[in-house]
Length: 230
View (cartoon, helix red, strand yellow):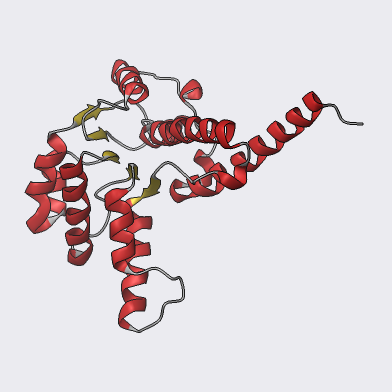
């Protein structure tokens, strides 16, 4: 016969496994290879990387509305974004599960994490379906814009990588960031670009986007490409 303590342990293990599966699925928005990224296994190799890690770990209530991690490829920007998302979601899941007692009552992930390319593809697919009167995925462009504009935490990897000719998406991203800036919703981005390059990518909206992001926290990372070194 199973004791109460054994039953609680079994339930706790089941919840952790179910939650881990959800984390692995949801974080696939920036690549499944980042599912195991944690603050603890991000090892800075430069002073700027160490400063960025400390700032990301301290980000939360009372922080500026946005944080931008900028630097060349392979300096650990995505690792830090994935670690942040995991940190906030594990904290939220543990809190809710401990209060509600079951994963079935868990309200869902704390925010959205994805590359900008993945978000643009999702939005364009919904737009194309709307014009062709297909609604196979059940989403409209407005649904997606509302979700991205209002979610508590929005993390976008590889910001600025979408083609400069994607004017419709640039307009959508401007709407999303304007609303998040106005409401103060936390927004964290990574980019390989500098501020002036971001302004150039987003055309008519570029200067406005760059200006609003500059009102937040901007961190620069440097160092060798970790992927090549590995």
